[in-house]
Image (cartoon, rainbow, N blue to C red):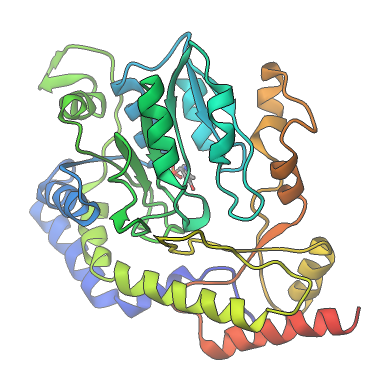
Length: 368
Ligand SMILES: *Cc1c(COP(=O)(O)O)cnc(C)c1O
């Protein structure tokens, strides 16, 4: 049996007629940038997340960058985030001219350890970017409490967690603003790049709209330096179709995760831990193993693809040498980077495929 970590074609095939038909409509209408589908999709995502505004942009990275810019965060500022995330989270802080300040993670949830935020706040701290990593929300109450105490902006990096909930609120509606990515592999993925900012902070909406469009409010009147960063009309049309399936797909991910948890129980393999009062959307199903590399090799030989997230925590990345972090600074992130990896989990994964993966993992440990 051959099982990929993810199978995008299977998902496309399951909704092919709907997708093809909306694409053709966009092609025939002839409005390819900031058309009616982008506008409608912005409203639909705002409604879905329980926020007032959605601003479609070119990708999740730009969503984060433009949000930092909209809050005037840059030179001389510090932004607190996690070193155990996709590089873009920290990259945009640096691109904005500010300095990323890392806070170690919790070894069970892989999310930022909220008890270590406060000790990293200085006079220069302007914002916190909590990342809902792998689809599990950060324990946001504490983050908001600290932010309020020190007057900080909270920007949720919700790129991996669309549809996840914290205390019955959708992620994206908890901080001042939040960012989503529609990269093809995300829980709501398009067929190319795409991203969105959601917020209920009316004070940044106009600026975000200008930032994504060369700093102009009126065509050819450039009031500030901006970017060319729009969500494509054609992508928005396809995303509107897929949004209608998102709950069903997220529930299926949740169901498959619970089955993995149950079946992998008594093995020397650590399965994901959920905090209370949340809905996890399992963008990735991450396990921890002391024999990770050996196990990955064994699964590969059995036709099962896996992926290592994340092999190098951001404080140890070449590009961040200048920040002078060193090995040992964030023990939990480093510990996890040597042990964690993802098993195949996506809505189209068949039960017999999952059973095969479970059997192979058991076989690996039986023969050890
Ligand atoms: C995917 C991702 C991003 C960046 O999104 P792109 O659309 O690829 O630019 C940022 N942060 C996290 C946590 C992500 O997973």
